[in-house]
Image 1 (cartoon, chains in turn cyan, brown):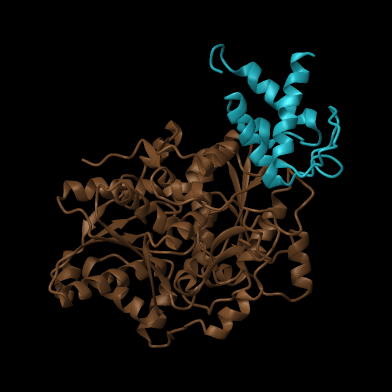
Image 2 (cartoon, chains in turn green, yellow):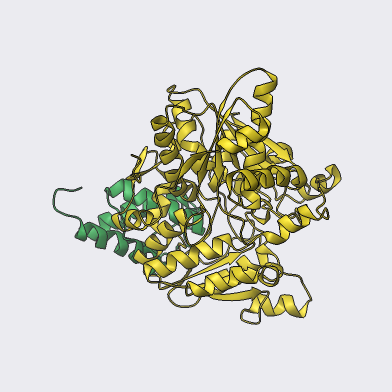
Amino acid sequence: MGDRDDLRDAVAQVLRDEGRAGDDLVVTPETPLTGGGFELTSLALVRVLVGLEDRFDIELDDGAVMNANFQTVDDVVALVAASLDDAPVGSR
Amino acid sequence: MTRVPRAWYNALADVPVDVPPDVPPPAAPVDVAPHVPMSLVRQEMTRRRWIPIPDEVAAEYRRWRPTPLRRATRMERALGTRSRLYYKYEGDNPSGSHKLNTAVAQAFYYRAAGATRLAVGTGAGQWGTAVAAACSSMGLESIVYMVGSSYDAKPYRKTIMEMLGSTVVSSPSERTEIGRRARREGRAGSLSLALAEALEEARSPGTRFCTGSGETYSLLHQTVSGLEAQEQLEDAGDPPDVVVASLGGGSNFGGLSLPFLGELARGERSVRCVSVEPTACPKLTRGRYAYDFTDASQSTPLQKMYTLGHAFAPPDIHAGGLRYHGTAKLLSAMYDEKLFEAVAYPQREVFESATLFARTEGLVPAPESAHAIHGAVVEARQADDARQSRSVLIGLSGHGLFDMAAYQSYLDGSMVDSTASDEQIAASLERLPAQPSES
């Protein structure tokens, strides 16, 4: 299992905690954040992002978040991955 | 010598309350895009006591801060009181009110998030003017949807916003779909309609909508006022027994009082904080602590607050900034724990005190600030009756130079007192949304 898969699993767990997805939801990179997927509201997405900042000890970039097109799980994974890539070595 | 604070004070670090979380509106939009920069979200949720002020925001603050704290000695003599009345004046900046303290910060964070233009709705015009000034400083464009009746009644508000580079639109307008529909239906302008037009405007590329008063980060930014006042009164050797400020959405009252309430919570000082509201819009003194919409669009998240109901239509008083139906959620949670006091007064006695203040101190208070002045007068009289002397800090949130029509109506006797009726409040509260189950 690659780093990206591990990251997706961690993101998916936070999405499950904050969304209203059923336990039987099978998560793929294309699983939608809203209808038919994690059933997130905009408020829940904000809580997800705050949860991910805590989980990975990162600060998501204001511009990256505000200009992201959040449709699927991997849209969130890409945001976190970019922030992890930008974080200085030893800061997390 | 007082300096501009280097950090905002976060009362959540000290006050013994949990602010209930926002909940999605019943008809939650499909769009899940965040509309508020994460920097502001973090400020909303953290329990860290001090939030550093970014250098660029601090540099902006230094253009008009520290704001003066003065003792109203002539007013004291006119009242014949043995109490000491101090006022912290936030009107000496291009916007003329405290609103610029958060407008500058929000413009900074929205610009960092990629915005090139801010869209806002404004009622009396203070928030619109503050955003116009902040955007001018931060290199952003701005567009202000101003409630049509205010647009017509306060033409110089429009002028100053345009001087600062903003586009000002009378709401409802032909510029947006919701505005055109309202005009077709013959609907009068309202703040909620102006907000809805600004929200629609924010769909334009590079444009973001930002809100003024009730959010916790807005109160946080306003604490520069209370922090400075603490230092100034320490320098004067006369820390306050009572802090009095008017309450509209809550940023003015919160900005001045939260640093003092933090000291109280930490056991460092005994102080009373008193919020003053109009009898026409008595959300703390007669409202209900419940989840409600923050505006009449019913599209924004529900917040738990002291509210008269989002459908409440207050009588048309002159303190336009105090006509909001709800109270900031942080202050609501604190009031529910009885951490501060609330009083309500009708506008004629408020303007009587404001006129005395103008004649004795040479400064015309905004109608909103006039409520705080009257609250301080009542405090002083109560202390005199009890043969006590109090140090009273007044939040003078802005000047009233655009409010001469209000003062004229007081002087010519045409001003009337308005009090919300029990039936009016009950009818409005019946329209509260279904309350989320406590979990």
